[in-house]
Image 1 (cartoon, rainbow, N blue to C red):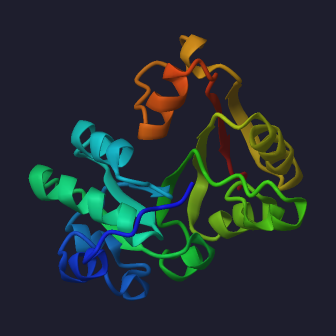
Image 2 (image 1 turned 60 degrees about the horizontal axis):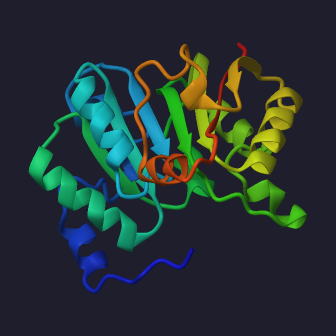
Image 3 (image 1 turned 30 degrees about the vertical axis):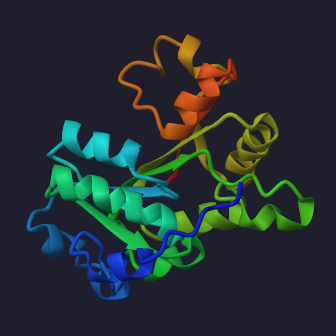
Length: 214
């Protein structure tokens, strides 16, 4: 999907107090930025921010950080936060490849991956956010038993992700290939923009929950 360039988006992001502009300097110090020691949950590839904004409103006892690399998408999340003004929500504009540069060991409790780019060509498998290469990155800053929650409508990416979880030595806690028909995993489910669109088309939503061991 081509993203429409929004004029002035980079300037809006650069001037926003909701965006952490030098995130590397917060490594190991995120609790200071939020002014509390609440758990930190991170969404990688948050899009327009519907999912993470709703979570931030539902759970003020948790600090949320949304990561997005596309300015034209991030600016929409900023617009939303300008109305909501949740104190427990911050954004970072960056490529997830560099995520270990902004979080210290044991600093993050949970990671959310929602409808991530499938990178369908085999030679790009390492770029998938559920690849063993990325799981190794997450291990560097997740707490022991820290969780990853992943949702997608792409069956091939989901099967790949299940294989990578096992190969990386992570523990699979839950799995469904039809989330909206699973009463247990669908309880308290917060939908993303893509999830609403794809499920309305009749596409089943797949979800897994995994945790690092040790």
